[in-house]
Length: 316
Image (cartoon, rainbow, N blue to C red; front, side, top):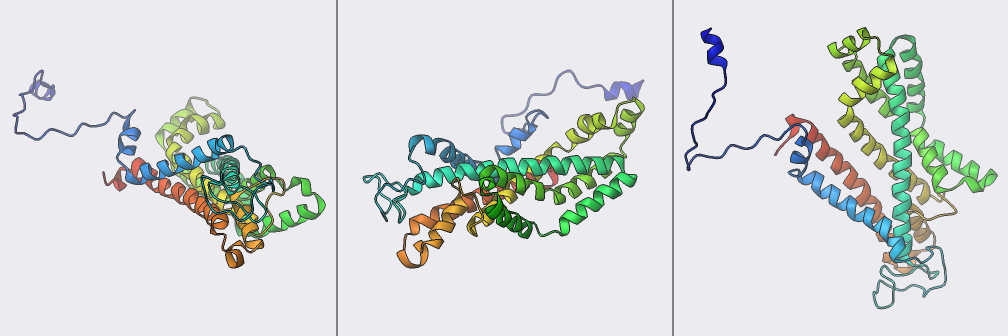
């Protein structure tokens, strides 16, 4: 009886003296992410950079509705607000700001679609292999290993070169994003498979099996929610990887022929001597900074999210 009484909470607490240090409020579980996110410099800086870039991609083509491929302006004009060329013009009279804004929009589209498609394929294979195990896991793991040893960039170069000759209409932003997504999923599938292996032996998974729920329901309702932070960070890495692969294809001249992208801007500036002979730095530096800032901010955000989700890594 005495032990029960001793364990009961006190009805009132003694008032704290004015000189005593105030206790740090413990964040509620619901607002824990926001609590630590607002105190993470890496997450805040990366998010700010991405928001600025997204704003340029969304509002830029609205503010400046000039066709990025229109060759009807002044040639070789440096950045000037008075002349109407915020980032200058190319050797063909094209508006660099219009190309940059539309290129950013294409970059985010490729990252979103390519990274999202790779994440979906990786989750489908990783969850299935990790949860089912047995011969299903062996077959899916073999398929994943085959795709892992295939050089992705070389395969995409071959595909793009073939489409350039046999089906040039397919060389657009949409098809590029799909091809990148269908070749970028293997490492994500293996990582998700490993995490699923560790979760499928937990007690709550055994209880879900005993309740008669089907496997796909257990994956969606039990395993996936417990890996939500890990899945989100995986998507961010796939997002940045898709942007880099697409920019590499564009830079070597195998990008879209019916659109504009940051990699294509760099290819055109290099192809027409903007960097080596003409000194038109405003033609090739903005797309390079745009790609570097986008991918760099995504990776820094991923590090910040890892510190937010993992209490052992928090420095705040």
